[in-house]
Image 1 (tube, rainbow over the protein chains, first blue to last red):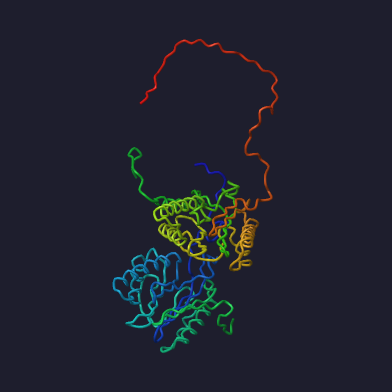
Image 2: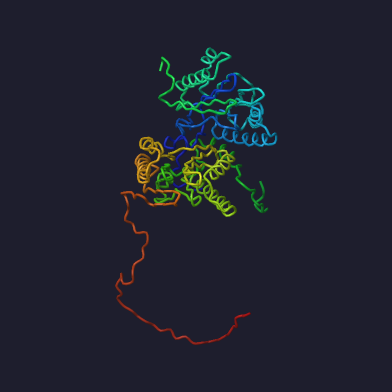
Length: 226
Length: 275
């Protein structure tokens, strides 16, 4: 077959990253339980290779009124899973005629993530409030495991803050202490992880409802090595 | 593999049998002579302003190192209130936007409503996610509907981002620099057009794959203003596209008329059937 001229190979530098890399939410996400609710938080950076595709991403996705998920991994996969679960939960809740349990939501995530574990790349934290068990955090990492934890971190930046979390989390923290803990942990992770950055998005979920806030780049908690 | 003598209707949808073959071939030929899809190096941008959305694009389509089309249209019509800029594989962006446009037309005719942006975005996201990145379309969708002015980007793997300003394509880094510097919320129309034009211009100047003219598309509640071209490149060529000459351009030197005497040999009449 005649080939006219050269075709630019995808290995050539002239062809930009975003054409061949998948969009990833290389990320830091975390969720903490407190008595009466949960605090969830995430950074806001979405990358395609070395390019930041969106610097103000919202990774805290609502799946029901008082159940949110924090997304990490492939942006497309996590958006798709969250939509599927959101639909399933909505349907389930209408059938039951009462708000769904956080454990139900977490199991729905786990069902999708485990069944399609070979095709998907998704690490999700499910957190929310229900009447039966109050504030709960469930971790559904890549591969489709499901485990409930009082505090969980996820994403590429989480590795930098395991030590911080282990030493600074104590059971029995109140809402404001949890918010401060989350903001500090996310700030530390964003400082060290190249795939995390932007602004910090936080939310508290409790019986009263959902309260969202944003900490802008210049208002991030500072630490002595910064 | 069926014999060529047996007629087989092709299955619906895409057939990825060749993807494995291509991957194997690429291994055999180091340096790869397997065919690569045509990508149009591009700069496209979009900005949400006070009364609507402004989309902009360059007009160069390249076939490796040669400019294949100097006046390529990269801003595609989706519906009367939604337009879409496409970067990535040229065929994929064309066909995807055509498919979306047809589906939304059918919806409009069935329901009597103008389609909403979220509907277009959801259809695109579903389709691109289903094909797992095999459709190389990076799209910027801009439009105005009853819920407001919106700008979305959809990636080839099916990820969606909703943003107030955006640039895509091989010239996106240059364009984004201009947008990051100049964007404010609730810009006026003229300022928004200038900003988008400056962004595309930066892409054209800094990227080999982008160039020629700039197209701008302004979408507002009142309607759409598709300005093509908004700004023409200074490097225009003088070639005439049509080579028709008026009678008399060439002087007539001699004229010789020879009448042909024809004899009627046979005459037949065929009646036309009338009802």
